[in-house]
Image (tube, rainbow, N blue to C red; front, side, top):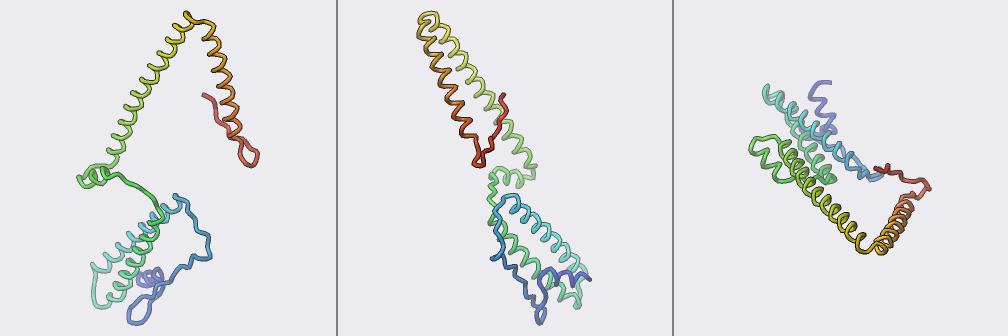
Length: 190
């Protein structure tokens, strides 16, 4: 099969006078899949197909003569159909890209720099939050020690109440981790 037949086969066949009659893919009877990874893979495949069609157009245009007008029209129509297909497929994808990434790309920089900066920022904020948490734990421990010296009976009662509350919370968490089929979700304890 030569390249003009490939373009014809890919676009659904040709009509009269070099006009393509696209084949429609009727998916009304098929099950619609809303898997985000599958949707993204379909868009990626469509992009690869478009890149192939653009390459074929480049080859056709670079060696253009009167005989290559029909293949050129067929490839242009195939490109338009695939672009339309990609637009429809991309509507099913919900991907949000921060404007900073586009600004970095416009500035000719690597978008991975943005990811690295965001991760470093998250690590810094996490360390600050961990420091605050550790400080509050230390304060709580210090207060309990001071309270125990002053009010030993009340602190013992408080610890019993906390232990009962913790065991009840753990029991409820385990009850909620039972799946509908009777299996249990297992989380390793740290």
